[in-house]
Image (cartoon, rainbow, N blue to C red; front, side, top):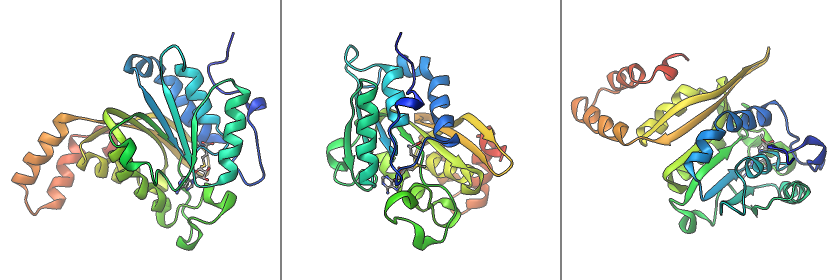
Length: 249
Ligand SMILES: C[S@@+](CC[C@H](N)C(=O)[O-])C[C@H]1O[C@@H](n2cnc3c(N)ncnc32)[C@H](O)[C@@H]1O
């Protein structure tokens, strides 16, 4: 019987490539927890930004299947070693994804606009000095700049552009990233959100958040803007009251 997720012993590695870790496992667990919904969602195109070892995109391809359902997979990483390692991991599991070495989705945005039905991201989220962001090799795996938000804040508008009308985004965040603010920013773009998985260790608390477009939110936002033209604090209060999981933080 084929495995539903990638097997660690078949995941390829390289000293300059991020090995599957707690955050990778949390993301795959979130996808497993939502697998029934994902299957009913019938995605045509699934994409991972920052594929590292390939553990996550391989697991997603095994979970949702490929050939019979006509699902296509695409993964990007800024680190060329990651792209090679991901290709080996996919091959070892007998699944396929198109792999591109690029900065987030640079060069793909026009062609792929509004086509991605499922996007998964375990971004570099560790707070670091800004000049560590974008360094070559393994450092690009974790260096997230101020509050760990530099790469995340670049990914969000790109995800919004790439996601289809029914698109779902699953993203790993750390408490230090201020996930409630991320949710509010996405809400302003018309997305609802929920935490699919939460993991806490002594050092950090990880959340895997799922975002999806919600037509009702856009209507509410327009009304809010009309009613509170220049009162951001009240708008924030309103959003938090509409948004139980954000108010938890
Ligand atoms: C925390 S690791 C996650 C790797 C893998 N997805 C996992 O969960 O095990 C973050 C990955 O994002 C990649 N990355 C960092 N900045 C990027 C960027 N601007 N564009 C694409 N990939 C990036 C890193 O090279 C690294 O492979």
